Length: 426
Image (cartoon, rainbow, N blue to C red; front, side, top):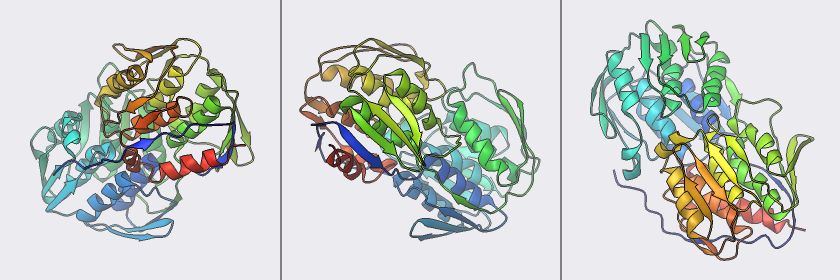
């Protein structure tokens, strides 16, 4: 498979006055793709309301269709009728970590050969833990990373398994999502020194429990999933709170207020951490009715923060840090080197390329205040790099985002939403 070609540069718009806007964010990618996997494995039909429509979710839908599921798309919903997992099939992972880490354990239940590949950039993303874990469970796999092929026999025995998920919590979630369909269930033990993004594992456990799967947390790094049915259900997807981050950050950069509509009362999404993070950086965050409002003055404080449990929020925080009036230190995010790109190096390089002072450390970034200037902001095929550049472009004239279309990975129409927010400026 060839890498997806993008070539559209975008002049990041300046915020010429204080912002006053309400923004409706599309559904959560993390929840959409978890619910799609569980719906394909369920004992009855499911309906997903307000799912994310993006490249990542489309790749997941097509992967599950290839394995036998019937998925009907209607306006604002997906109806999934599960069928026996079957092969042969070829799965395009694109650059979606959830597809490349969640679908192989599903495919192991099929009888036949299931081949996986993706974008060129996907071939360098960590996959060894997924492949090794399936082999340890008795599944025959050719290859150690993309591309690879699973030679399924129609069942997985399960049992007890030890893995090192230090590079991504998705290795844990991918196995837990499918484990109820293993003959003996699964006792999964993480044996590495570090486990990033724990909230994403908690999200996985929550989605399983709501479908009647018995999951026991044996310890902070060990889980037991009992064998049994996965129930079909109707589920409404929350707005993607991580994708809300750039819009919330805009209030700190430009001043004024941005309200994210339909913020959930309770959630397992890591994006909920923006409430605390943006407060520490000088914003005022409060619930207003069903929304969450961020008010800023244009003054941004530096921050010293361990983001090990919320690594995907780093690009937004780093962009704000580049505009802050004091030093910022971000730690606990070494695993970002294995995301869509090496995000630590990419953030440091791009902040420095527009006059900033950013140093990549062993597990994070140090960012000093500096006078920024216009220039090309490269995106590396990474949606969060693109939105980080847009945040800086609110204040710095002449920022050009190399390829804003990469935001379609999780947020199609980002440019329109961004422009609408600024169009509402007072």
